[in-house]
Every structure is written in C-alpha cells, then in structure tokens.
Length: 131
Image (cartoon, rainbow, N blue to C red):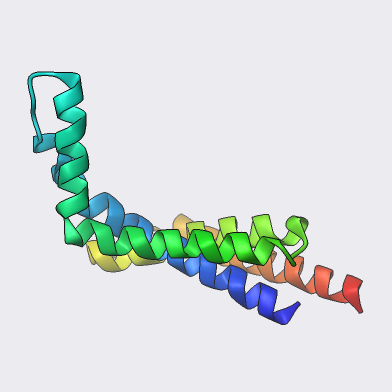
C-alpha cells in the first residue's frame, strides 16, 4: 500500500512538474508555417521532435504515465485516480510558480493545501480499510 502511494505521488510530481515546461517549451510551434495542412503537420512534428527543451519534459511526463499504468495493476483505482490527478494539479501549480518566478495568489495557495489534505485523508481512509 505504501509503495503504491509513493508511486502515485511520483506520478503526480512527474505529470505536474513537467506540464508547465511542456507548455513553455512548445510555444514557438505557432511560428511554424506551411502552405498546406499536411506540410504544416509534418513541420510541427519535426519542430517538436527536434526541440530538446520540449522533448526532455515530455519524456519525463510519459515516464509518469508508464509508472501510473504499472501502479494501476496493483492499486485500488478509487485511490489511484484521485491521488495522481489531484497531486498533478498541485505540482503543476508549484512548478508554474517557480518557472514564472511569481508568488501564487492566496486562493490558489489555499486550494493547493486543501487538495493535499484531501489526498492525505483519502490515503489514510484506504490504509485503514486494508488493515
């Protein structure tokens, strides 16, 4: 049970920590222009496939998906989904604050704390069920 929770927290960190980097490092894709939609698509794929500042966070994000998939084989889905997804939102906010170098708004900060408390209560409830 403990290993599953640690894995799900890791998934939340990988997903949430990489989301702002993926967004930031893929913004220049709008500068890619072509005459046809097919060529536009090919050039956009080439841009993303050769942009290492985009690829590294994307690979870490996908590693999170692999860990999530492997964890689902043993974890209770009613625990796995809320823990991974809610913590992903929290870590997206935290990493976004660091990337943008600005403090969060009070409501965002309070919301993140409430998500963490709710996740802890969810984990505690599942832990007590398995005793």
